Each structure stands twice: as structure tokens, then as C-alpha cells.
Image (cartoon, rainbow, N blue to C red; front, top):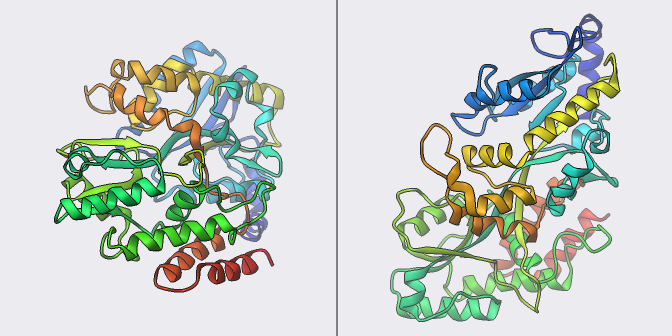
Length: 432
């Protein structure tokens, strides 16, 4: 990305000079008298995102009334277009002050972002769940804030488990026994949904290795793809397939048909995202931590998008700009404002106070575009898993190769190749 941006910047220098002192696509100045205007790009999460961030909407009017001298210029951009829009803005010296997107590492590498220490208040940092705060760390510095969360956990069909006469499994041994019982006593039911496809096989690698004490990295942050724990984990996946406990095509089945099968009541277990259940599903389901092995503490896979601040070397008063940005974040993460937005968009909070509040008061807020109240049970269940989350090591430059590598390794092992040999080769390739 760095080379790409350098070329674009060189080609558009004349335009960049003409744009000095502006940051929005309309060329609006950031300061008007004593006012500071913050240009913000927000990713579109639903058909209702635009309404929340509308200039004449309740949220922006309330913010500007509570923070005189600060104006918000918010643009909502679809996920299909956001990367193109952002790269174009950067290349013409019109980067936003604040951006909501998923990735951040390339912007750090190109020296485009402000560290969070420049604008995040101590009170705000203290209430962000530590694992989510650290998910945006790179080279010892945190560069972005998590805006919202999703979490993966084990879903189970209560009625199928009752028919099979088994409890919710907490360990691999218990899971194996439960799958055997389901297969024996519940004809036509798939015991365990498994996705090791190219769509999201890296998630399976995380589920099983983390919950066996392994994972992508060792304690020092170095790649450890061929660890003993990882070899055991991949072999365990193979054992589930070999025993006939999984869906017929785990190599090509993505999580979406597995979710459909679970929603239809034809699958006993699967690991899935917190929002995978359909509103019209009749399944009597429960949610639990992913089963573990060797006494490992349960680990959930966390997913979060981010809010980041771009540098503005032309800001008339950098301290005033940072103070305005800090006020924006303090207001956004205020427990009532933030809780309302999480229910509105249907995601999980990344702060401890909103997690506590939504576990018992989600029904005080409504989902976007409806009068439907939030579910206390939903937030209580999934917010309780947030503190156990780990994240993909996306800040490391080798991640794309690792992601594809572990998927290939899983598939080869599950089709008969030696796990240690395959993972040794992958480790040698990545750590060369």
C-alpha cells in the first residue's frame, strides 16, 4: 500500500496544495471562527446507519449542543465502497479526521495515523475491555479504538441434547462423547458443524488451537504454527471428521449453510457468530464457551471494527483538534449513548459499563428502524464472553500468508497428511 500511496501522492501534489486547510470532500474548512469541524467517515452497518449519523438527526444535534464549538461532518459509506473512498481521500490530501473501518496496519505503516495516546482520555481507556483495546496494538503502540464487537461461541440445540441424553460439553472428551450419542440416538441429525473451507478456515484453526493452549503466536509474539498444541488441535478436527460426526463437506461448506442447518434444527452443535440465529428460527438453543482440552481456559474468537484518527499536519491548532476529537470519543462511548447505538445496530459493546448495562437494560433501547426492544438475554449471554476473546494477529505483515497457510494445512491433514510435517513446513515458510 505504501508504494501505491506514494505514487498517487506524487501525481496529485498540485491538487494537494490546492486543498490545504480542507479535509472534507466538499472542501469545507475545518475551522469557522472558533468552531472546529471534524470530518468523519462511518461504515454502513445497516439500512439505518445513515439515519443515526444524519446532520439533522438526534445524535449529531445532541452532540453539538453538548459540545459548543465543535461541528460534525459525517459521511456514511457502504462497505463495498469504503476502501476506494478512503484511498482516494488520502491521495488527494483529504483524509478524514476520524475513520470507521476494520483494518489499520497499512495506515500505520504509511505513517498516517495518530496514536490513541494523543486523544483518548484515561477514563475512556480504562473502560474498554483490555483484549479489544490491545487488538489495535502495533509495535507497542495502540493506533485505533474498537467501535463494536462480535464474538464466536458454541451454539447447541437443547432439544437434541436432551434426546441424546447428554449435557453441554465443556471438554474435547465430553464433546466427542456427546457427538457419539447424537449420532447414535438422533438419526438424520449432524452432530457437529465444521467449516475448514477457504472462506473462513482460519477461524477453525483459532477455535481449536487456542482452546488447546496453542495458537498462531507464542508468548513472545513469534509465529508458533507447528507447536505441539497446534498439532494436537488439527488432529482432533480430523478425528471428528473420521468418526462421521461432521457435515459431509467440511472442506467446502462455509459457515452460512451450517448456520442454516442449525437454524432449521438439523444440527446439534456449531461454533458461530453471536448474530447467527434467524428471527424466525424455532430452535430451542443455548450458547456456551468453546470446549477446551488439557485444562485450558476457554477462549472465544473476537471480531471488532475500529475508529482511528488521521494526522493533519495543516491543522491550525493541533491541541484544539485533539481536544475536540477526545470530546467526540468521550461522548460516543458515554454509557447511554453507546448502549443505544449497540442495540440500534445490533452489535456487542466493547466497554465494560455498556456490557453491564445492556445485560439488564437492553430492552430500554430499540433496534434501528423499528420499535423492537433489545434483548437483555442476548446481551447478557454474549457480553459475558467478551473478556475471553482473542484476535487474529492481523497487525503482523505475514498474516495473509498465515491465514491461507493454516487453511491449507487443516485441509491436507484432515485428508490424511501428517499434521506435524505439514505444520513444520508452514512454520518454516512463514518464519524464514
